Image (cartoon, rainbow, N blue to C red; front, top):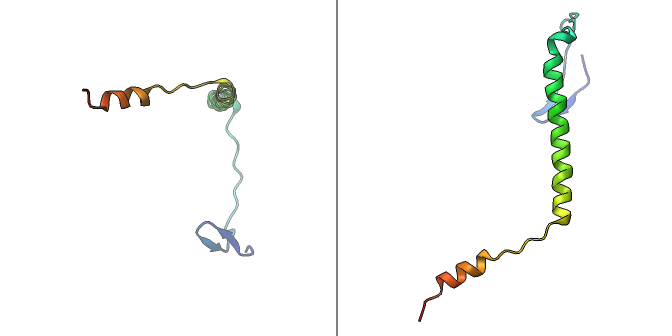
Amino acid sequence: MSEPVQGPAGWHVLRLVSRRAVEPPPFASVRDRLYAALVNREMLRQRGIYLRELRRTVSIDDRLDATRAAAAAPSR
């Protein structure tokens, strides 16, 4: 029996009913999933670096608002 544990849905008391030994799957059977997860994590990290660098160096000149205002103005 555990001490009360606070979780997102309130307080819980946990009781261990049984244990069983679980063999981890062989590396060969999970290699592709592990590789894909690591590549995905690195791609997200590199994307973050790229976007931070891009935001640091970019200069934006928004001319669409002036074009819209000119188009909406009544012509004489």
